Image: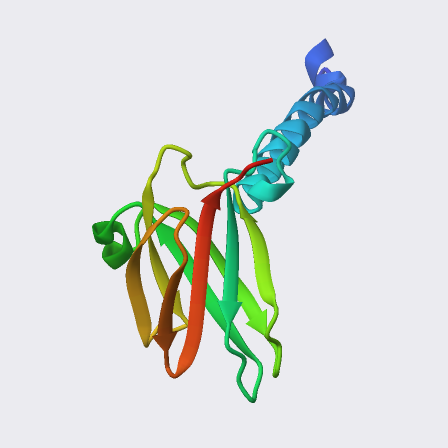
Length: 162
């Protein structure tokens, strides 16, 4: 006796075209969502590229050059506790200083709130260890001069005047 062939339904017979249609419906929204998420992450790490951010402050740094190239790191915080816990950093930047380079460095800051009258700054040379470092309170609009490992560093943070 022969067995009768199993009559499969329409869904089973058309499973491959249905899978293609489902993929074509799901892939574009997932792709757009992923691209937007990556773009937002990129902009959060590079606020100066975001057209919705506005320059809040201008930073001028004068550094006495040395015999060799080095990097000066500046991290800006709202309070002394934030500096020590390394939480709520407003901005962090690195300035490359070449031998005999005695120019002033002008930089725009985007993430410091405009309502502040002072900020705390952590100054250091080595990125990995951040030792030795200096932690100072700066009044905005007033030039501050300090010395770290024999190098004189002057910093001026002012509200941006467009």
